[in-house]
Image 1: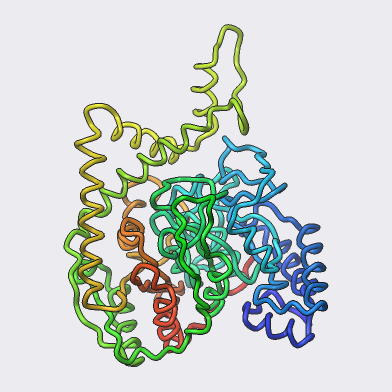
Image 2: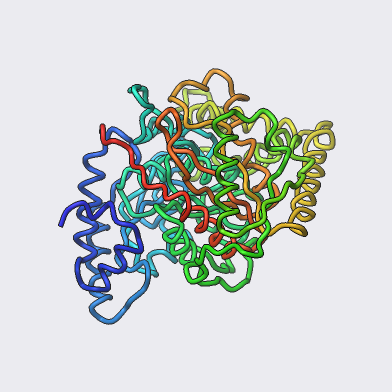
Amino acid sequence: MADLAKLTIADARDMLRAGEVTSRRITEDCLTAIEQAGALNAFVTVTADKALAMADAADQRREAGDDSDLLGIPIGIKDVYCTDGVRSQAASKILDRFTPAYESTVTAQLWEAGAVMLGKLNMDEFAMGSSNENSVYGPCISPWRRAGDDAPITPGGSSGGSAAAVAADLCLASTGTDTGGSIRQPAAFTGTVGIKPTYGRCSRWGVIAYASSLDQAGPFAKTVRDAAIMLRAMAGHDPKDSTSADLPVPDFEAVLKGDLRGKRIGIPTEYREGLGEEIAGLWSRGADMLRDAGAEVVDISLPHTKYALPAYYIIAPAEASSNLARYDGVRYGHRADLHQGEGIVDMYRKTRAEGFGREVRRRIMIGTYVLSAGYYDAYYLQAQKVRSLIKRDFDQAFAEVDAILAPTAPTPAFALGEMQSDPVEMYLQDVFTITVNLAGLPGITVPLEVGGQGLPLGLQLIGQPWGEANLLDAAYALESRASFAAKPDRWW
C-alpha cells in the first residue's frame, strides 16, 4: 500500500482501527515523503528514529485496546514549540542549537493522545512575518506554483512550514501558532484548513513567545474534521499558563453537521474597501454557499477595523521587545565572540545584533520606542484603547450574528521576494486577520477554490469566544459545498 502520507487523519484512524495498516507503515511513508521534499525546506529537523519508536509504541497501545483518535497519527511541529531533547530555536540564530529538556503543554498532550512526531517545521523567525522568508533556515517554499510560472511561491507565514508540509502530504497534520494571522493566512495560501482558537483555549506554556497577549496555538489539517480532531487534543486548561481558560473542551468532531438553518452569518462592510476583484468574487460565492446551508447572511459593521493594523503593529512589537529581552547570550543560545577589552555590554550588543534577523530587530526597535518614556501614552496606551474598541465592535456584532465570513488575505499567495522591499506592504497581508487576535476570538480558514493564477483561495470564518464547536460546524458547511479537492502538481 503506497502513499499513506496522503491520508486524512479520519481515514487513517479508520484504517488503523480496522487493522488495515499500522502506524509504522504510515510513518515510514511520511518520512519517505519528507526525504523527497527537500526542495520545499518545510521540515528543518527530522526526528526519524523518534518517529518510528513512537509509531511502534502507538501500535502496541492499539493492540492493548487503546482506540484514541490520534493514536499512531504522524504530525509535524512548528519550530516555536519546545520539544524535549529536540532542537527548538524558533528559526532564529540567537537560539542556535537550543535543545530544551522539557515539553510544551500542547505537544505533551498530543503525545499523550498517541500522535507521532515526525520533526520540526520551518517558520518566520520568532513568528514575525507573513511569508516565511525571515528564517535562519532559509525560506520555506510552497508546493503550489502559479499557472505557467516556475517562480517559487510563499506558503505564507509565520507558520509556512506547517502549511506547506500538510499541503504537500508530508504529514497528516501539523501545529502552528497565530499572533496576527499566522495560521489562517498560510492555510489560505496552501489550500489547507487552519484554525486559530479563542485566546486561552490552548496552553502557551513551552511555546516560545512573540506577543504574549496575542499568541495562540492551533492546528493545520487537510479537512475541517481533521482540524476538529487535532484541536480537541491540543486544547485544555493548563495551570502552568495563567491565561489558560479552565473550561471543558467539547468533542468538536461530534458537532459537525453542516446544517446552518436558523444561523445568521455577518458580512463586515468595512472589509470590502480596497478588496481585489478575485477575492471579492470568492467572498460572494462563499456567502452563497452558507445561504445554501440554510444560513441567513446579513451585513454588519466593524467600524474600528481601519485602526486595527496600526494598533497591532504597536502592541505586538511592544510585547516582542519585552519578551525578546531575555535573549542576551548569557544563559543559552548564540553568544558573540568578544575581543580583548570588550565587556558584558559589548557582548549583549554584539550577540543581539548577530543573533536576531532584520525583521526581528525592526520590531524590537519599534516596540522599545513605543514603550519608552514620553511615547508610551501617545502610542502604546492609545493602541490598547483601540484594541478595546475593536473588541466592542465584535461583541456588538455577535449580539446579532452567530459567525462572521471574511477574506483571509487580500491577495493569493505571492512569489518569494515580491514584497521584501516594503515592510508595510507585507504588513498589509494581515489586514483581515489581526482583528481576530486583538479581540481574542477564534477564526478558521477553509479552502474554497483554485483562482485564476492556479493558486488556492480560502476564506475565514470568525466565531464567538469559546465558540469553536459552532465555528467548526459552519466551516464544515462551507467545506462541504466548496468540495475543494485540488492538490499541487508535484515538481519537487
